[in-house]
Image (cartoon, rainbow, N blue to C red; front, top):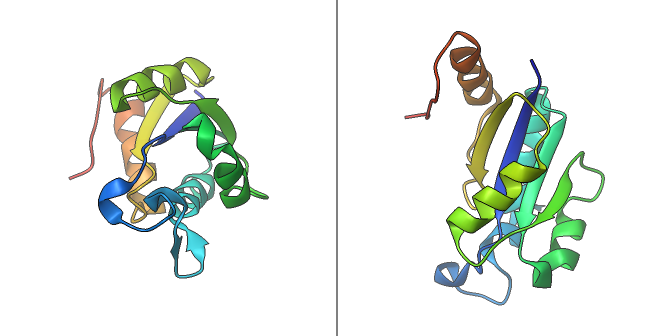
Length: 126
């Protein structure tokens, strides 16, 4: 059973204000996006796809420098970005996370995987 993760990062981050979209802004010295990629990597996920706005490719590549993650084109809406990102995944189990939510912990990721592996068709942390 191979687990893949999709991080949706194609939004403009306008509500956060500033010049840089929220997912690429720094939080404690790291881009917000990088917090999620690192948490997924620490949980053992090797296939991580980040759906981005093509106009932000440079920001995404800089945020992901040295990380094990692939970029995929996002869509005009969140649902279009999810569909496009899911098509790029290679695993049997797909985790989907929003790049603008940096509080993802490794224990949560592992619990989600365990629940699906135990037979749940879908799970969500709460």
